[in-house]
Amino acid sequence: MEEDSSAMEPNRLREAEAAAGELKRLREAGQSQYMYRSIADARVVGGRVCLFAVVSEIGATVHSRGTDFTVTLRVIDESYKSGISVTFFADSTALLPCVKSCGDVISLHNVVIKKYRDFFVQFDKKYSSFALFEGKTYTECSPYQTSIRYHDSEHDKDFLNQMRTWLPQGLKDFTSNNSELYLMNLKSDSTFDLVCKVFHVHVENNNSIFYVWDGTDTPAAEFPAILDAEAAKSLSLHEGPPLSREILCTMPDFGTVLRIFSDRFVNKVSYMQKNIYWARFWNITCKQNFGIWKGTFSDSGGVRLLSNKDDSVVDRLKMYDSRIANRVRRRPMASIPSSVTDVEYEDAGYASLMKSLTHHDVTHKLRTLVRVVAAHPCEASLLSTGNCHLRLTLEDPTARIHAYVHKNDLVGFFGGGFLTAEVIVKKMNMVLGIPEPQGSVEVAPSTRNPPWIWCCLMSYYMDKNDPWVSRKYRIYSTAIRD
Image 1 (cartoon, helix red, strand yellow):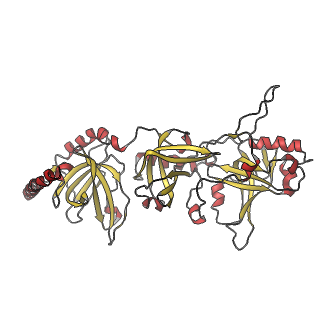
Image 2: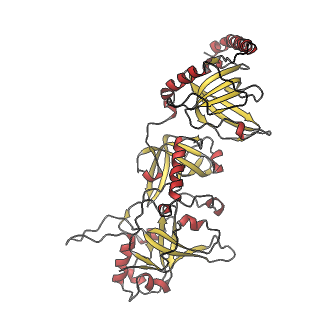
């Protein structure tokens, strides 16, 4: 097969030269005609060709080794569904193609075919030009972006319609048949696609953790009703390694940041560490580990960069903008504030846990809406002595923290009055969401669903030489109702 391919090279070169001669003749006659070729026929080293193709993959815009900016797209057509890379160079990012969505159509004029291991297309700043069209059949035929030297041809509309007609079949190898979910609709043990902004990527060897966000909140989880004392003591606050404060401060104040784990190399991972790209993650599965959602790539899973103008991205940004414009909607999406607690500062504004973790002052106060995931110690007999601190694990969709009720505040936290084991058990069950047995037969419930409670927190530090690392949280001005 390799010998046959080599034998065809002279013929392809002669065809390319003939096409170039015809293009020159038409230009001299004052006509803007371009001889478009299929990708399969255009693969002649050194040939300058014109292509009409579909964008199947969008690369990251980066600095070249010189002074230019560069971006690489992958394009396909019916003759060559595996696609070919097209590399663009320009003096500024504004002159590079800005593809709205994978599946859009691109017209390329006078691009150069080169080969390094495989064939690729290079855009020459002096001679080449491009135009981008939406891939949807119901949109108009005029391009939404053109380069400076681009001139259309009377046959462009025919080629565009041809690409749009072939598009649904042609792109099926680049998409999945899974549902595209928001983080607020996550399901355990099912396979789906996610469109998210990548805020950070932690890479160790070939393993990666993607920190992704779409502006919504992951569903609140139920927990085992039996609260194991040892498990509560060693409860994890997050999946994966802890983030530095520098990285943490790049995270949004509202909306869940999900961790997606990959145990294999992921292409373009270095670009996604820049906190500017949206991406489509396909064939993802999720599960919960004591209420914390964790995403993983399935065997056929992958990730592809998206433009900020992609329809799915635009929808998510609109939803988020609408959410943060309303103070009430900034609260956890699945929350209905309970009447379990009283707080002294009811008129104070709401702040998420992430807002506090990234606050510019190490010590500050806030009023927040959280769930109590766990408590340590759990023994009412120990708490009733009033000689120990109570550590509660609090969570909202943005973060999970430990917060302490100081031993001097225990009586007030449990509503005042005499601190008995019976009162402590009853009120701890209320905040932990442990339901009371129904009926005459006492059957222990298997799960619990902690209520959303208002809580006042203050941060403090234990070591003035390292305040951020030694920072802790204390619950104050908060009491459990009878």
